[in-house]
Image 1 (cartoon, rainbow, N blue to C red):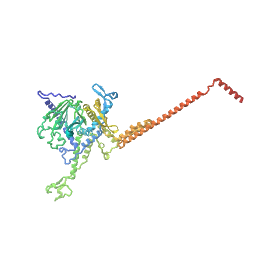
Image 2 (tube, rainbow, N blue to C red):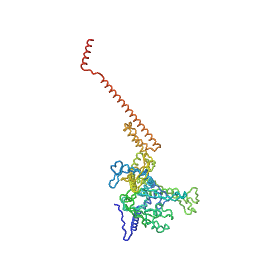
Image 3 (spheres, one colour):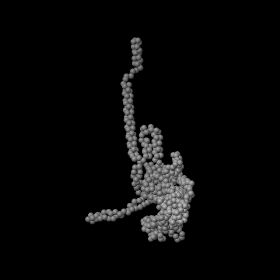
Image 4 (spheres, rainbow, N blue to C red):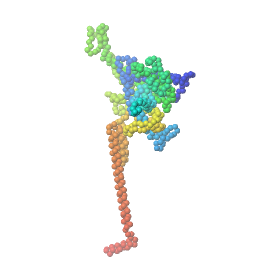
Length: 634
């Protein structure tokens, strides 16, 4: 279903404000009715199951134990899917960067360069930490595990703060007086991600996801003073605030969620707190704000340039053809109730065994209620046969077997066993290392779907944050980032640095827990594997092995690790300098030998040129004289 912007067409004689109010009120009631029918009961049970609250109507036994399987499931899964901040990736759409790092204008897009993409990544990491997203992510994931949906709202937070100072003024005769000066400064001009309670979000019932939802309504309670100071709101004076919270004209649904959040024991109403019920009605290109379901405070186009709903949903188990899917707690809800019932009935049986029912003939005791089993208790009876205890029938172990089977059913449903929780099975249930690895691997495949959904949601949050950065950052900023090797660095950011066209993504698996032992083993194996291959290169350039050594050291969380790297880097630098000096010396020796050989050759040539040249005739005569002398001598 394609999303469209609703054009409010009021009835004849109806004002635009009245038409907008009718639109929001009607759609709010429809979305609220759909969710109450489809989800409200299971959401309330899931919340109570997580908190360990027994429904007295479902558990009419004496024992009131609650087996915290729901709590265990939620709190075990969260650290399995999120343990670290994401590593952002800003992928430039420009296939060939412009020379000298200059952006290129193409159509309506300003194509970016790789260096600009790095700045975008650093900006997103900086803002992620500034917004406190580490804690917010735990709430985000917990909502999805409990209610099947988690909601994050991405907005821009701009606030000013007025300060009053006393400035000196030099007057007549150099008399110094002080003048009160008020100064307004911007103290917040940044994106904001807010995790919204799923009970406060009302979605188009015809949608299957927020991607094709025609509208979303965010309900919230806002102090009247905040509403009055909002420059984007009009008609604030028309809001009627009641003198007491129970009369007409109050915040209509002031205690809408109290029965869920406080289990019908909500705090008493604060009559000194003036709050307004705000309904923010969002379409892709429209925003209507309705106060107390009666006053239209705003009716304008979507203030954000991306023209999207400013919400990102996180699913637990998706239903491809229906908006609300399944959550971990909705899946195990019947099993949670069953295991509670079995355990409480078993405890009641044990209590009756220890404190049996007393049977007696009427009139045996003056006060039959005094017949209680207790240490040192004395019963005065005239006939010992007039009293006895009711013996409970023996159990054949069925309750324990059923409870164990129910626990196994819960484990299978959510892919969590004792090993996943952090416990070792006892007795015959112990498994070999191979079985543990196999079971963990299979459970990991189930969790891979959750991890993929979480990464997609975080990616969408990053896209919306970056779009707001491009829209609202209009001045130079200085950001503190984590630089190379964890060092703190400061960078300058200008609006031009982020005016590019990017795909915003995160590195797959970057939010998962880090298996330090496995990473250490892989790094050591890499070092052992690569060293023999590059050993000839190491002899001439030892620094080539430094990145691998750094990778190995990074797997150890030890103090002084950086000092080791610095010393090793310095030693390699000295070794390289020594190699260069030795090579230079050898080159000088070779040059000297070559010069010596050249000089010797020139000397021999000169000597050869200095000797007299004998003609062939002279040589022949000399040979004849020599032969004659040999003959005479002979």
